[in-house]
Structures are given as structure tokens and as C-alpha cells.
Image 1 (tube, chains in turn green, blue):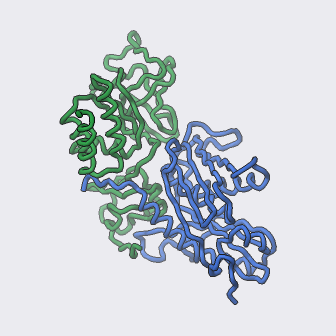
Image 2 (cartoon, chains in turn green, blue):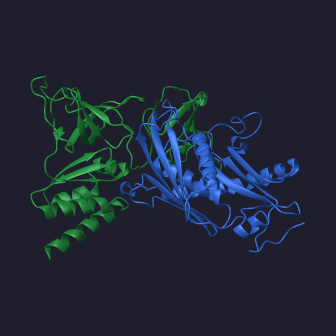
Image 3 (cartoon, one colour):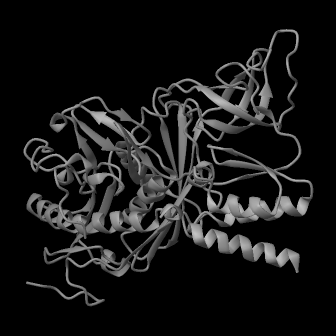
Length: 241
Length: 242
């Protein structure tokens, strides 16, 4: 069992915490300005945990709890893959696996005006950016980057989309490039779009490549870096023989 | 003083515990929890947009659906659903995902006594798995009062039938804190000494109830250690970085 945690605020960093744990005591800190990410909440001077996961700290003052889920909590500036559910006069309604449907304003496209409104049917897969995520409101999306350029955002045509946990999609987006993508990319050519909400889209010229890449990614969730490389190598050997 | 139990346990001894999480593919969070032969499967779906009729849309809503092993649900199961719902509502933070509904489905796999407490523990583990924001965890324990006035913990079905009365007690888990000892006291008592839910059946004097409470609290520390350990084991470690 774990021994009594010491009173230093660093003692919980990179440890697994469960809901209820008090991880930071503001009254003992000299610099009281800290930024709280997902999974933490403030109760007067105590910062307590509300999700099970690993407590992370990033200099100078950011704290958050890292965990893996099948649902997504919208966060500003996240890039996500959404599915169009419905289109209204002002907004497209997009499912991003969150607690509420997200709005994508029909003008939130590069050079978007009333005259040229894009047409998306229900079921269209979009690569979008979250621009507003306030509690009690539907999140708002945009198909442009901060400077108004289209920058890769928009509808994803063809290809194959599968769902995974948010932890896996975070791993795929981490830098340096995660081993499974690196190993696959050395041998195969494919396009991939990863949404932080646990959706991954893969496209390649041949369907068999798409299937291999998708399976390799789905299998890599519980594997370590070395194991991922071995798994990909074995997979590629099988198709070559 | 000590009484013999059919399975050779001491009065305060719990049956072997087992917990596994993330076992269902389609559910957003799931867990199975077993105490001896009693086993319960809990699945969490949501949060989904919108609340049910007669629920406060300013807060998140939790709905509990009880699936018995066989047959249809009756009055007793309805009561269990209600108790579970109230318990889960009090440990979750309902103001984060307002106007959403989270469904918790409880499937009884086998009932060998202490069914409700097993279900509460399973539901709590499933909520953790789904990442629903929570104030703290909860651990449930069933205390039984024998004819002779002894208290035994975690009874089996056979023992339950011979009992004069029993109490289902739900306690907050023991938390780890950076605050100095004693600063988290609520009216002079530690947080984990609070009671979230207490359901009693049968005859019981005040002293006997307090005795149950004391025994249950002692056992809840063990349960909460187990819960914390099983959460630690089953969290995916991002080992690829190391």
C-alpha cells in the first residue's frame, strides 16, 4: 500500500488519483496562480480530483488529470471529427461524442457568405475545430483555423472512420510521432485524421491498406512503444508473404 | 462471544472481492463487481443530451435500470433502483454536465446475499470507468444482526434469511490528501466517517445500529483500499513513452 502522502504539492504528480483526492493546497503555495485542466476542481483552498486518472503537471503552472474515456468533453481549440446529424438555417448539428450536439455555423468556412453555404448531408464526416465550449451551452465548431483559412478542416471524403478511446487518440497525436504510426508510415502510404474526441479516419489507395492501418491502431492501445513496432512488423510480414 | 458462520468466516470478514472495469465494448463505462458468489455487472451510458420528465434540467440526471437475473422487476427492485439513484446522485457532481442524462444499468449475474451493496460498488466503479465527474467514491457494506445480537458483515443469502435485521451502509472512500491531517474534518470527524446512505430492515436497537455502523466503517476502509487498488491496476498506463 501507499504510504501517507507528504505535504509537498508535487507529491501527486504522475501518480494515479481517484475522485475525492485533494492534490494541491493553495494556502501553502507561494505562487497561487495555477491553471486547472480537466478532472480537477477548486473548493476554496483545496484542489480536488473528480476523475480517476494520472495527475499531470506542466511547467509553469498547469495541472490536469489524464484519463481515457469513450465519451468526449468538448474543450476549446481541440480538433475533432464530427458527424453531421442535421442542418438548420443557421447551423449544422454535429455529433462529436460529447454530452450535447455541437453547432457548426453555416458561415464558419473559409470565405463563407450567405451566398455559398456548403451542403452537407446527414452522416458527413467533418474535421473541425472547437471554438466555444461553455458549460450549459452547445459547443460551437468552426471549419477554419484561427486566421480564417480552411487549413485541412472540412469534410472527409471516402476512407474509413472508426471510434476509439480518447486516450488512444491523444497517444496518436502526441509528439514525437507515436511508434505505431511511425512504423506504419515507413512501409505504407496512407492519410489519417485523428480527432481528440476518439474518432480516427484513415484513407489509402487500396482498401487492404486501410484495413491494416485501422487494425494496427486499434490493437496498439494497450501496447508499449516496442510492442507496437513488433506488432506492426509482424502484420506487414503477413501481407507480404 | 464469537459466532460460527457456515463458510468459516469470522464475523468481520468479507468474502473475496473481485472487480474488473471496461468489460463491455459498447457501453461508455462498465464494471463487474463480485463479493463471493454475488456478482453484479454495471454499465454506464452517457451523458446524453436532455433530461427526463420531472427531472431538474439545471442539473445532470442519473437514471438507474435494474435488471434482475430472471423475471421482471418488482417492488423490491424498484426500491433498489431508487436507493442506487439517490446514492449515485449524491456522489456525482451534477452541475458540470447540466441537462444531460446518464443511464446506469445494473445486471444481476448471481445473488448470494448483500446484493444491493454489491450493486452500489459496481455502479461506482462503472461511473469511474465512464469518467463521470464525482465528488468522491462510495463503498457499500451490508451489516447483519443475528438473533443473539451479534453483528456480521457481508452476509450470504442463507445468513440473510436467518437474520433479525440488517443495515446497508454506504460510506465515502478514504481519500489521499495533501492537506495536513485533521484539516478536512467536518464537525470534528473525518470525511470518510460520513454516511452517504443507510437503509435498515427488521428490528434493531440504537446501540445495535451504532455497533453496525462502527463495524461497517472499519470494513469500508478495506473496501476503499481495494477499490483504489483496482482502479490503479486497470488504468491504461501510457507505457510507450517510457
